[in-house]
Amino acid sequence: MKYHIVTYGCQMNVHESEKIAAILRGKGYDRESPLEEADIIVFNTCCIRENAENHAFGNLGALKKLKRERKGLLVAVGGCMAQEAGKAELLKEKFPFIDIVFGTHNLGELGELIDRKKGQKKAVISLKEEREAVEDGIEPVRTGFPGAFVNITYGCNNFCSYCIVPYVRGREVSRDFREIVKEVEGLVRSGFREITLLGQNVNSYNSDGRGGLSFPELLDACASIEGKFRLRFMTSHPKDFSEELVRVVKKHDKICNCLHLPAQSGSDRILSLMNRKYTRAQYLDRVKMLRSAIPDCALTSDLIVGFPSETEEEFEETVSLVREAEFASAFTFIYSPRTGTKAAQMPGRIDEETAKRRIMKLIAEVNENTRKCSEKFVGKTTEILCEDYDPKKGLYLGRNEAGRMGYFASEKNLIGEFVDLKVERANGVSLFGTVEN
Ligand code: SF4
Image 1: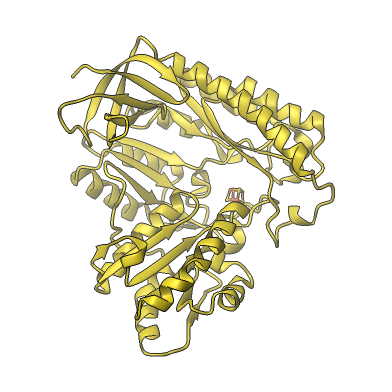
Image 2: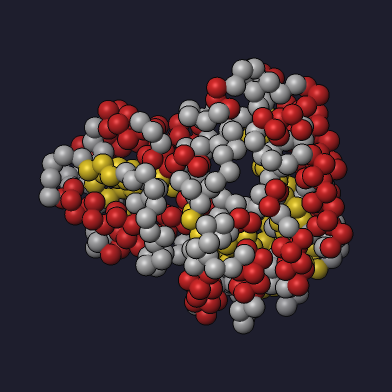
């Protein structure tokens, strides 16, 4: 029997889809297939941004015909959109052919839900208010070789006013550090070369006392594992970003000198409305502290424009923050209201035209930084972890420590190997050159 998983959203969801694949394999769905040939289709949804939610609704609608044509096809919907208040009912009403709805807290029960559905005609809807288990028993079907994700926390305690995550993923729960270190050791032994530790706010790891170590201590333990590999982590919250963490990053060559530190805005008033719990000056102080310890550290960020009541001057403060912090790259978003969050109730909605104009200006500023950062590599040699082959370009590709994508020709399949790229030219985040080893 065959399965197909449709994943929306961030790395967290990509990794959860790897766990869903493992559960499906355990239930006899042993091969991944195109959507049209699958015996079970699982939508792993995301509700963090309106776009991802709209996509999921559109794609689910398109399944109606397939469900009619393929007898026995099961359709399951999980992820944070399913967990959102009232969404399970809405999904069932709009798409009555859905067989199973499950939430973010009970992903581990998907196998039992499939069994239950097979024994009844009615749809199975199973959602839990809080997470009970941390799914340490599930061995994910890894899809990102030579890279692998490892969850260190689930959920979030921060309640940024625009964000739905704490409502749909619950309060923060940390995995025991021994389980995490064991998982990283196993991945390195199996040949994975880039491990990314995942959490909504990795810096607050162990805030519930269930981890056993602080985040810098955990990072130190993971980076002390024998073998040639890279270690990354995301996401860091600026309010918890500490000197101790920077010391550990500096201490280990294995930890990439590339940090993601979402600023979201450059305006103190907007940061306060966002409930981010730091000011522009405090954010820039942390950047300064990082740069004085590790001058060549690439810094990336997330930025939102068009937050309710954002003035032109406040938007310009975000633009100037991009210049001051010299982000190597940044994800830029137009604010989209999420039902149930504080910001969704705030007055001063910014019109679409203004928001689009602002984001175009911000993107131009970010692109200029990206270009400058990539140009620095031209004429130099940089280590690339080869990740894939692009048949259209006829080139292998992989990222360097700073997250730049390097492209090169090779007669040999080098996927999973570290190579030295002599960079000849740069374009955006891409570097092109020849391999020296
Ligand atoms: S830190 Fe803020 S933006 Fe990030 S997941 Fe938590 S509430 Fe959302």
